Length: 330
Image 1 (tube, rainbow, N blue to C red):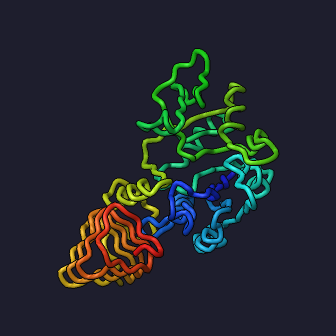
Image 2 (cartoon, one colour):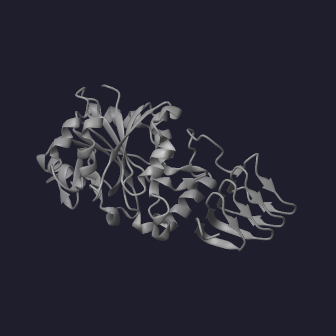
Image 3 (cartoon, helix red, strand yellow):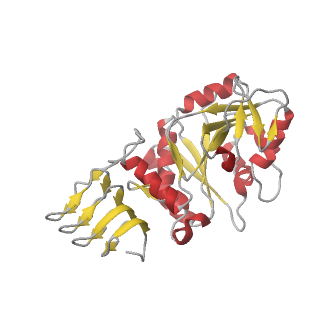
């Protein structure tokens, strides 16, 4: 199999983040000093992927400024810009096809830019190859799978349940949710309608499912988390700080205090906290548990923080609990 290329989907409006969406696109939410889109790129690099396409729309310049051409990561990163209306997951792939499909038949790994994950991609690629699949979805058990839109696979790894449709006579296991990670053959993109915004599940995947062959599923129980709301963002950071994920491809520390940070007399920093470069924690402040303090942020003396995220460069002068402090909210 030719070395895969990848596409990071990063063009969403992020409306479920409320006011935060006006400041940053979801893939630029920082987790322990690293934006989500960079975490995804680091994961792809750790899995041997070197050529990546990122689609851009809402505040896309921030994403391009973060990743550049990929050379600093040892990768080659290109961009597919969507002007006007967002094209959706299917339309995005169709629009970027000239960057993803060079005629070699190399598979395309697609991953959502708002997730943090640990997954062995080789296992997914091996399953995709062994099944001679046109598309292979990475799925996971989830107590809310039905709310997300559940899928089901049989013992052989064939997808036998999709969007409420079930393969007649197939024995399916537990309900599963789609992680937003999948492997596609270039020809699969032919199934996406040629015009307008399109959902890849409701168009290409639905057509492939009803064709009866070529759709495989890989079930993972490895760490996966998406950060679509403020509460999920807070919980995602807490998961990292409390050690629920290893992230061996991290570029920096995942908890604790950066060497250039300053901790004032009598201040307490919980072990499940992350303090960035140049941050200042005032005397008598109490930081943590589950607190992320961005680079160069300043926490005033005596302030107490718990279950909170403070973005870079903010001055925090009040107690904070269960909140994200962004530009203009310190």
